[in-house]
Image 1: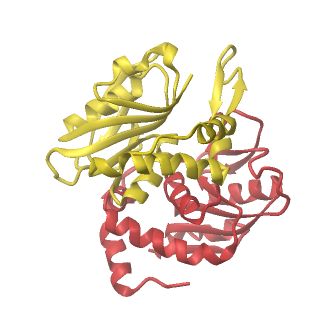
Image 2 (image 1 turned 90 degrees about the vertical axis):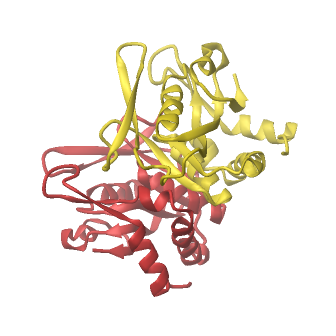
Image 3 (image 1 turned 180 degrees about the vertical axis):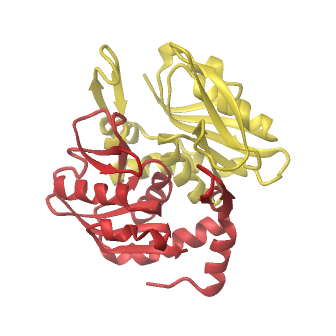
Amino acid sequence: MANLTEQERAKLLDSIRDVKDFPKEGIVFKDITTLLNNPEALDILMSHLESRYRGYNLDFIVGIDARGFIFGSILADRLKVGFVPARKRGKLPYRTISESYSLEYGSDEVEIHLDAFRGIDGAKVLVIDDLIATGGTAGAVVNLVKRAGGVAVESCFIVELKFLSGRERVASPIYSVLSY
Amino acid sequence: MANLTEQERAKLLDSIRDVKDFPKEGIVFKDITTLLNNPEALDILMSHLESRYRGYNLDFIVGIDARGFIFGSILADRLKVGFVPARKRGKLPYRTISESYSLEYGSDEVEIHLDAFRGIDGAKVLVIDDLIATGGTAGAVVNLVKRAGGVAVESCFIVELKFLSGRERVASPIYSVLSY
C-alpha cells in the first residue's frame, strides 16, 4: 500500500475549497466539488484508495448518500466489486433495514436494501463517505452492514474533522485521507 | 464505438429489478441497485459508456443527484475528465445558478456551481442520469450547463421510459442504453 507523497497531499488539500458560513453561520464547509472537477486531483485520490484497498479482498463498497456515492462507486469500479448505496429514508425501492441516529436537533434515518450483499454471509464491506464530522451517519451505516450479514472491515473518509471525535461513534476501523 | 452485444444487453436487463408500487401505487420502479451490486453487469455497462464517449473529447461530466452521481463519476474517472454534481436546491455550498422545472404537482429546483466548468468557455459536457422519465430534471440541467458556459454535447441515461416522451423536454442529443 502506497502512502500519499507530501506533494500529492498538498495537491489534494489545495483542491478542496473552504466555504464560510455554510450550511449556517460560523461553519467553514469543506467543499470537495473543486476536487471532483479537477481530474488530476481526483486521480491522485482514487489511485491512493485503490492501492490501499486492493489487498483487502472486499466484496462490496457501501457509499453514503450522496457524496459518498461518488468516491464509493469509482473505487468499486476500480476494484471490480459491487457497489451498495446507503440512502436516506424512503429512497430505496425494495425491502430495507433502517437505523436512526441523533442529530444536533432531532434525529434522522438511513437505510440499505435487506439483500444488498446478495446473500453472501460475512461479506467483506468497506463503508465510504466524503466527510466524517460527528459520526452519526457512518455509525448507523456500519450497524446496518452488520445487520445485513456483512463485516465492516473499515470505514473510509476523504476528510475527517478530528475535533468532533466522530470516529468514537463508528464500530469499525477508520481511515481518513485528510484531517483537520 | 462498440455497441452492446445481445448477450450483454440481456445481462443488463436481467440485472435491473422491477419493484411494483414504488414510489406509489401503480408505478413499476426500475431498481438499478441490483445492477450496481453486480460487478459483472456494472463493468459491462461502464465499458460500453467508456467506449461510446472516449472519442467525444469531453471536458466534464455532469451527474444528476443522486443516482446520476454513480454512473457519472465512474465514467469521469475512466475518461479522466472532471466530474460536476447537479444538486437539489440548497445542497451546494458555493455560488450557484439554479433552474426550476415542473412536476406532476408543483415544481422543483436543481443547481450547479457557477464556476463548475473552471472558466473553460465552451466546455464540452455530458449530462448523465440513471433514468429519464418525464425529462423535467434533465431538461433543467441541460439549461444550466449552457448558462454556466458549457455545451451539452449529449445527455445519457441508463434507462429511458419512452412512453413518457421525456426526451422532448431536453435541449441536447440523447442517448439511452436501455429503453422500455
